[in-house]
Image (cartoon, rainbow, N blue to C red):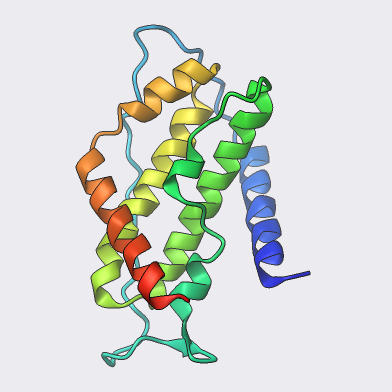
Amino acid sequence: MGRRAIAVMCMVGIVVGVAACSSSPMVEDTPESSAPTSSTPVSVLPPTTTSTSVPTTAGRPEACTALAPALLIEQLQPGDGGNWPAERQRVITDAAANAVAYEAAARVAPAGLVDPLGVLIVHARFIGDAVSASSSLAGARAAIAAVPNPVEVTTATATVEGWQRTTCR
């Protein structure tokens, strides 16, 4: 079993455990509903090294390894597969796994990636919360479309994905 499969299984286990402990009731979608407005404070840890070098493992930046299991932001959008409960759970799980991967990467990333990774952590949680609070595909899509900072998310995504393309070969 590869590292990525193990990492994904661990993240799914964490998400399922957290979901099982959650006691918040389901929120019904209404035409008046909007995207979640509460934001959980995010603590993005600074790089763990005091030098200007980026931590590496076997010549590869550790941030690359941390980001490897993360899906592209576009993949966190709910699809129309005909089974809303299963798709809803997939997006919630994937969004939580992305947040964990971004947090791990932020701990070892070069200084220029820490803030964009912080934006992506918040955005992944936003998507998970929006989908979790939606009882329908249409409601989830509407909630996600109401992202409060689309330009910031787009810029952060481009920064992180551009760094990955040039660095994580």
